[in-house]
Image 1 (spheres, rainbow, N blue to C red):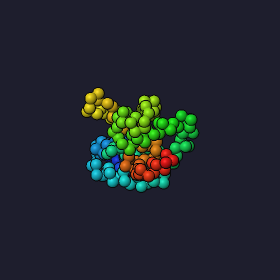
Image 2 (image 1 turned 30 degrees about the horizontal axis):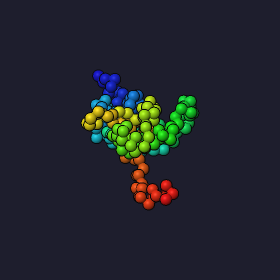
Image 3 (image 1 turned 90 degrees about the vertical axis):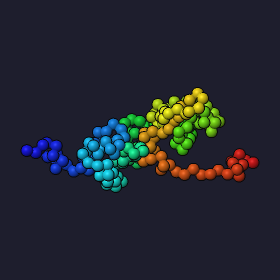
Image 4 (image 1 turned 180 degrees about the horizontal axis):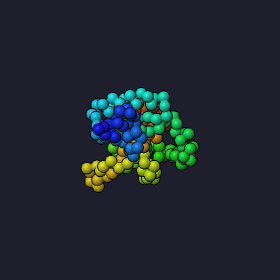
Length: 187
């Protein structure tokens, strides 16, 4: 006698089952956890994910990676429509200061508030609170120095918000020479 599980596997492809699991997952999921749920190997799951990523390239969904974990998200190109649908147009804008702090964290993570303040030359407490409340950054640990300051890093929500799969997709920083700085200051 066949079980319901085996009948289900016969009628639904492994790719479709993987897609279903990713759809109901509340956040990023490891390859090992997906493999266990699908009763297969992480290598098979990776192959299926590669196939899904290719299929999603021209659709409204994307696979977003956070380290070795993966999550199903909406395509960044559809953000305006999704924001309008959810009524979020006016609440998703960040101030110039918050964007500065976010860029510093994204490129230099993990980083402490005093290090951010030193780079910016001003206090960043308000911007950090805003970014934490929006889920774009998170506390990722404590520095092993006196006072044990909090270390900040970006979140999967940051990647999703900016349409990135990984922090490594951030554009390269341009080197600023002393001559460039002198030109900017009018010297």
